[in-house]
Image (tube, rainbow, N blue to C red; front, side, top):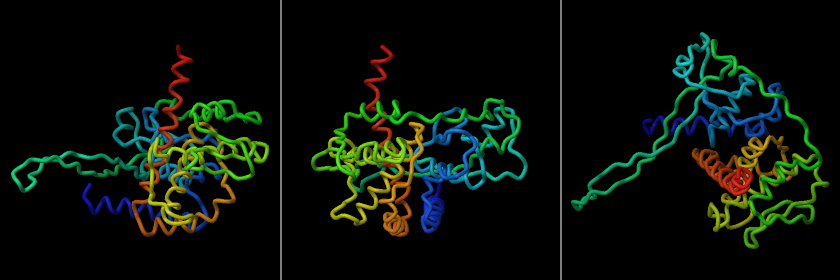
Length: 302
């Protein structure tokens, strides 16, 4: 993708996010706030069942809501043909992006050859399976509607326990104290639902990954409410949404986060790459939390 095309992708996607935020809508919360008839919310999936990550989650969630698709599976025109199916006439696809880098050998001007990594972004078009005819029936099967859990959700409880984070139940405010390296959470009884408790814990756990001993994420934050603060809160928002999806939880918009929208808008309007970077950092944080589950999963397998 040429530089101008890449910039257009950044501008286009960032513009969509800004437009939604200006209307008071958080795009990463749209799947849960919409009338969802397909059962539980999942990440968008490729034709082979592999989940999309990062910015592509937001892009395909948004496309599904706008077009009314209930199925979570997407594929390219070519992939549909390979399955002996075809895209319905007149259907328009949705944009997803692929980021990577190539290594180029160059002369450093002193007669030495040096290698330089050149990042690039490629955009391509995918179609929801509801836009495609002739696919095997498995692609059209809707997931079983989710069952409400008890007051404490066992698998979510186990997930956050397995991270090893120092989670302290205290007071009436949720936050991550980076200097003391602990997460503070109000008791679960103070939340309207168990899911809102775990969604909040997912948000704070995303913050927890920024510590120097983990992902060492720093946006130059110096004071409460500055640009670095807004960027980190955006990462935590997206991380919570992604993680809730993985844990089959329904997140709720926290009232204390309403004031963040204005600061997010300022960041996004000043930097067209900010939402891409935030989604990438959020994905790394969620991946990090998932990797911490490995010891328990390996023990169970043994």
